[in-house]
Image 1 (cartoon, one colour):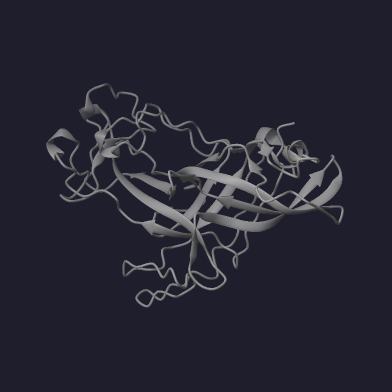
Image 2: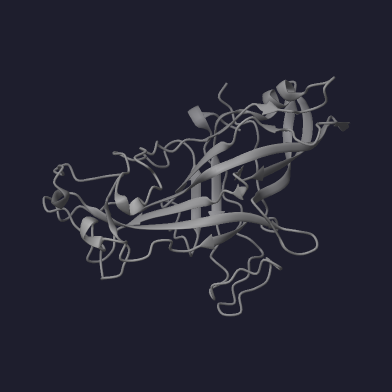
Length: 315
């Protein structure tokens, strides 16, 4: 069955931390005459054709296509270290409940990290498409108003440790992990509330949340962020099979795969507002409140409601 194998909930006192580089594009972008100009005021975010919906009358003529402002950002996940400082790349570490051999209760520590590539921690990329006042309307249907879209994408490696099955500890070894990273495509859940990179809001990855792109994303404004990819419709996260679990004499990888791996696992996330408005990140003390805005990172946002399971399944 296509069933979610784990129900992971992070409490408000155990949030996912992150440092965001806000607004990566410099305007104008190198040669603005060869790109679409700013959607609204001069100096604003550049325009791209809306890649997710267009009026029925739109053609290859850019004038018939609705333009959206495009804003890219970058986020590095991290976690506070016990003695101070930040563990960059850590997404979260928590206890999870599993089921072994179909019916036996099990508990393990699940750790998620963004991959390290060529010695560098990979970030999550935040993309926002939004209509702006004075933006580029379609010449064939000026009344057409597309909905905003937001996408947080990246990859995570998943590790399991400290397993106990029916109360009995089971040795998994130091590197029990998925054989490949899981792809994240977290879409802004605008039906549940607004989402902005700075203000946060609801995000999710499950069937029916977002239709994906209707065309490959090729505008030079993307600066290689998509390289002509067509973004698929929202679906749950696939958790790959596990490898290197147990010992040479007792390989438990297949058992862990049966317990925790599977396709189309739904995800719901609530991002909090940015804390440091003075342009700095307090890496030595991630819980430090922002002296300008008064915002504090703790407690984090409340856990969102459980997203719908695929194929109409019930918990």
